[in-house]
Image 1 (cartoon, rainbow, N blue to C red):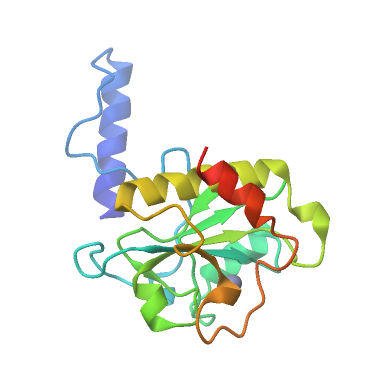
Image 2 (image 1 turned 135 degrees about the horizontal axis):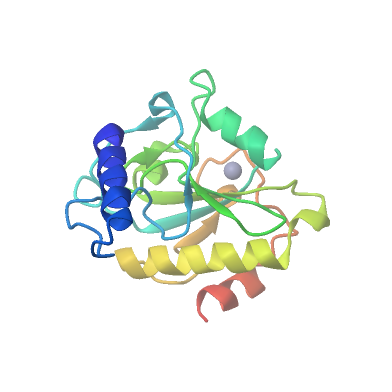
Length: 191
Ligand SMILES: [Zn+2]
C-alpha cells in the first residue's frame, strides 16, 4: 500500500518535471487524513486496523499529554512492545502535527476498548505539571485539528465529545491535567 502510493508520488513528481498538470491523480490516496500533518507511522502492532467510520462510528476526540518528548513519544508508538498509539501527536514548540495512525484505524490510547473504537486520539508534547509545554502554537494547531475532525465526522464541538484522557471511564491517567485550558481550547475549536 505505501509502496504503491510512493510510486504514484514519484510518478507525479516525474510528471511535474515534464511540465504536466499540477492536479493530483484521483487514484492517489492522501498519505495523511489532515492536510499538513507529517506522516510518521506507528507500528501496526500498536493499533487495530479497521475501516471507520463504517465499522465503528467516530464520535469522540480524546485529548492527551505525552509525559514524553515528541521524538520519544514517536519511538514509543513505533515500538511493538509498547502496545500504545495515538492518531496524532502535536509538538509543543511550534504546533507541528504528526499523524501516526490513520483515522480509519483504531488507536490504542484511551485505555478503554469502547472509547478507542469510537475516538480519535490526539497527544500533545509535554508534562502535565510543567506549564511551559502548553504553548499558544500547540493549542492553536490542536484546536484546528480537532475542529476539522469534528466537522468531518459530524461530532458536536462540545465537552461531551471532546474529552480528556482523565474523563474516559475507568481511566487511570490524569492527562491532560489542570494546566490544559479547556475554556480557551473550546473557544479555539469553535472559532
Ligand atoms: Zn493519555
